[in-house]
Image (cartoon, rainbow, N blue to C red):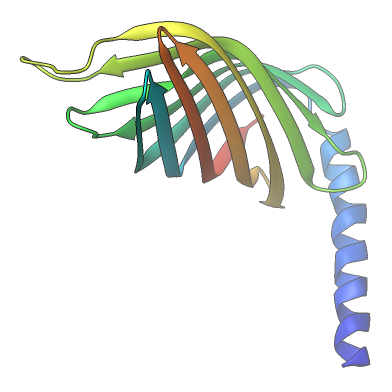
Length: 172
């Protein structure tokens, strides 16, 4: 058991040292896309519902320093409470990458959206409002990120809470 702990400690130390060298070389334009499961919970008046769906992320921006990224963030959960609905945010996002570990801490502030995606006879109505999001991620391979995020939005009279997990790829 001690041997396993020693090997794990050595591997973790090497990963952290190599990650700090990798992050020091990054600058310029970034583009990212993520995909994974997400839950959308809505409260409107006294009515509540929660539903699993497909969660997508889009990031377009810049690595402005060794550890800071600033970008447009589009984060959407696609769910079907009755009609297909895109519940998400369009936001200004910022990520801080820890200098000694492959860990990303992110946040964003912007516009919450609740938009039905149907051709005719929609029962849901679209709404817009304030949103904020935060998350944490682990870069498990060069430019590949396993992340978890929480988003709160208040489009119209709705209150949305959308936790999500996913795998993202970033391009520098």
